[in-house]
Length: 475
Image (cartoon, rainbow, N blue to C red):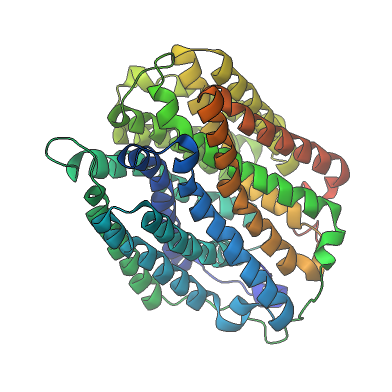
């Protein structure tokens, strides 16, 4: 998976239409994934769950990533890369159909109001997104030069983050208000129609992709690499652990934001208000990814980067402001994080490892602030983490698989398996939240970001040759 056949990429082509089409998929993918953050407090109240039990939502959803990636990995080392044989387009369409089926399963789960059925539907949905994770990210990396792959991936991830930004507002409105019971009580049926709508939109996207001519990147002479040779690379093993911690930390924080803001010592908000602030958390990731796409574009001068980054930050901030049901005064604090994010990019000098360490260090500070402070300062601290999560996925992935050569496909599948962190870390935080309270439970993601900080520092020291381009690091 994620194998780059350089021979087929040497041709100069215009990949604008395919890239736009895949970007639309990233948007829907992000939207539905973020709906988990709405489901957690909703199902917690509906079924009278503990925090630990409610985190089974993320356990089943992200656990599917591990199961799906493991199956893919075992097939690839014995039979060859399945996506290379079937083609990226067929792989993407299969992933969409599987995800749409998972959404449809919400109907019987809600009809019978049975928590295990919800978890089963989420597992199927997660399997579908696993296939998309394997195919779509790889496909984006192939739609252009290797030098701009990180920038391109950050751009598509930015639209993925756009989906996660509007999901809490629109999805929360659908479940908590529009389709809720007339008396305002919690009922499982409120999830039936929204998820049928999501299934319908996914199928429409699949229809669009099926009609668009997507270039093929299949190699007829693929080398089947057997064994566990990829694990001979120490930076890959560290990168897999860093990805585990990143996905776990990001998902855990997002999963607990509504519950965190409900705490009387923090803000005492209800779900309807909290969902708007949850959108700011994911909106921050969107801003950071747009800035990252520009910062990591090696073809731009520093002056142009600064101008484009300022313009992008202003435009995306206005988009977020128009989406959330909050006043300018309520979100003006976000401008401070945008300025800090802007400065961190330039301190990092567009070097993936150095920038990764800086962003992780800032998140450690913000998490500690959220744990020890109360009121608005604690709230702003937890919401600011999103903007510094922005480039972590693409940077960790790029650093982890650099220089693997023939083991690139094998190593990439291991990195995707590490998304298991989104299943495991929230469970541990949920256990701590039940024992010691929500605010103190954020010590778990603190350790996650410390691991990422150390990984970035390790790569800065030992993989300095990858700091310019992925192409230069592949030897």
